[in-house]
Length: 197
Image 1 (tube, helix red, strand yellow):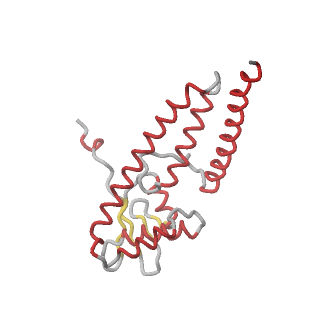
Image 2 (cartoon, rainbow, N blue to C red):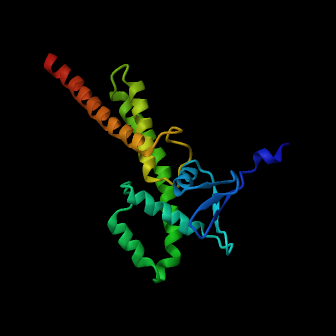
Image 3 (tube, one colour):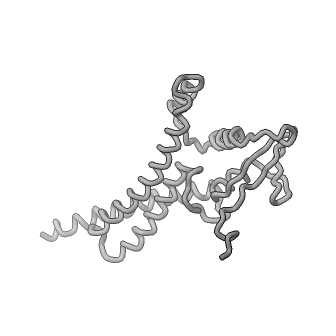
């Protein structure tokens, strides 16, 4: 009957000072927006307060993280989507948009899992013996790549501990090359019986 073990971890309290520095009260250390982004990816909840006023500024800090990620070339939000989103500010639909976006993102995460299962079932009969294990590994890497599109709604850790965004993107490029190679192998295997016949 250990109730403490069953309760979710309390959010980390982060204080933002006038000099724009962020202080993690749990680790008693100064941190960066990158550290906060990594906490989000690890599903570690946090709340950011203005050190002077005590105001909850978590939303604006999360927005800053998105701006930083977009500025690094990790473009995730299409320009038209951003224009439409800005257009909703101050309009009649402003109150409905956050709930809609949350629901849409939750549905997207669920559909990822369904897509993964469907791909596995669909491709398995066509896979030559011995290639199934490789296919399973590739599907896992594809799933991690898909999770790049849902950085704030991940159900579990998908990027290996200590792996940088650059390394992860290189892994995706490698995955694409491997998928192309497998497609060529499958095309060759399918064509082989026709030549023999």
